[in-house]
Length: 429
Image (cartoon, rainbow, N blue to C red; front, top):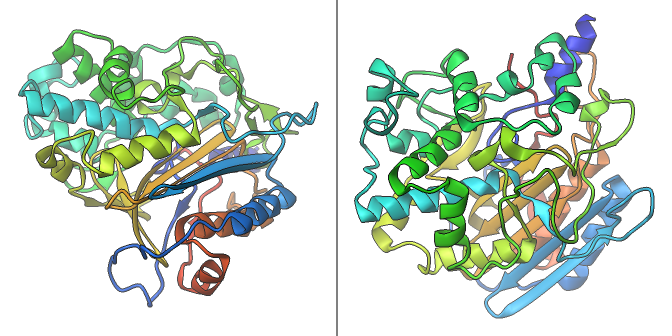
């Protein structure tokens, strides 16, 4: 029983970026990367290298992967593997995909639109807007900005939504497959957990912050936040395959979503049919890799936000996961990662069985987005730590080739970039 509980804790980790919170990797730059530098503008799209890297990722154990990269007017999209392990149906680059916490970038844009209009003040206490949900001194200390950069001190709501994890079981994940959570329920779960720190003290990633940001949007616009974001962020950007789901089903061509939670489940299980209200405005959006590239390009060439709001978005603080491990520099719904070929801005996302990355350079010239249809691929040891897996290195190769261009550049740079994979997604108990 003790090992079972330890194993369950190891299977759901709330960290920055991947829908369940967070990102698949946190980059640790080597000594050769002293401070951020611009991305090499001469980097080209290495089509052959990318297709090879995708194939290597499939050989390492990933069922399917789809990706798109653009550099100026040059564009490429590719895929490898299968969308359905039973039928062998292949994945395609245009497949729709649950993008998890990449949703947070869209939510932050929507809030910043309202900041420009004067209906929201970034440094106003959230008690001004939501005293009924976050009452008293806490609501007066926490500001809107603190929600968006995760410095609020509000803990994540995931344990409240999936309580069986506390007993070392994932049964509540199956029990809640078709359950619809109200945003206020999720907020109550997060507030019931011990605070991650004093408001403003440090950035600790928490999905509850962006559930609150969605409620804030509803109160100042009079619209459901998903509807407001669709009308004022998604549609103006011309994103034809990006939407918030109204049912547990993904509409349009899509892959299945495979997970076995680091071996806690006896075999891979498909989670593509799932009510995503457990994340809501923190991570329920569906999109494609091409739509994400298009949106991030528009964002960084100044077509989405005005300069003043964009400066606020890119003002970062050192961010941490719930164990105190650094996860990069987090702004408002976006964060920065230093790579061997320079600094990229991104968000990542992950839900049960699906993971996503969306990267852009600061000048908007290069974008790279990737989706995978399996998460938590590593088994765990007796202490609940994930064991090394071939997928780890293969995914690094895909990312380096997509971000940095030619495979020769990526290979030479790999020794200077030591990413730490976080594939277990443990929920802190």
